[in-house]
Length: 230
Ligand code: UYC
Image (cartoon, rainbow, N blue to C red):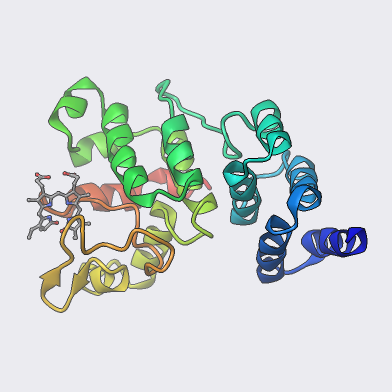
């Protein structure tokens, strides 16, 4: 009823993050009236740095078949809610679309491809990265990739999450691997089928960095100046 929707509107503005998350799920069940509240919510917050709560609201509208939701997103958020800034003219829209759909496995592949694009044409052909390339990545591009992952994963996935865990473990790789689910005992998690491609994964599980060629690339990534400029 209209009163239910109105009280959910209030809760959505004033609630804790957990309450906001539940409220978004409830609004998603309430048809057009619920969608209207979510659209209003996103519009009101669009000057601010998007959080994963904005990501949840956006995903409900993105999944919806309702014509007014589609029209709303096309006119206000044609490229999603994270500004797709790049200093190298890279198009991050494919990554944003996959993450909006919660297709974390395809998004992970696209992340590696986009990082090869940042490195340049030889890396795009090579399909993997040198740590010296990663050191020179523009902070803006890494922040865009990271924000896309954060906003569409309830703040669970992204390089900054991995960095925070890595620092909290005194940069100890052997403690870090099991913590993010990349190693169990002596066994590396096998790519791709043993990794967890949804939000039931441990914090920091995604995106992946192939460890086949050693730890240097991942260490450069987690040490990048992009994460102290956030
Ligand atoms: N792979 O095991 N991985 C690949 C990871 C290793 C291997 C891709 C992550 C250990 C081979 C991604 C872990 C290892 C290939 C990752 C992991 C190994 C491959 C695809 C846990 C054997 C294909 C994208 C640390 C003991 C050939 C890419 C190749 C691919 C990620 C094997 C994302 C997080 C040491 C044979 N592995 N990888 O970059 O050259 O190729 O890629 O790390």
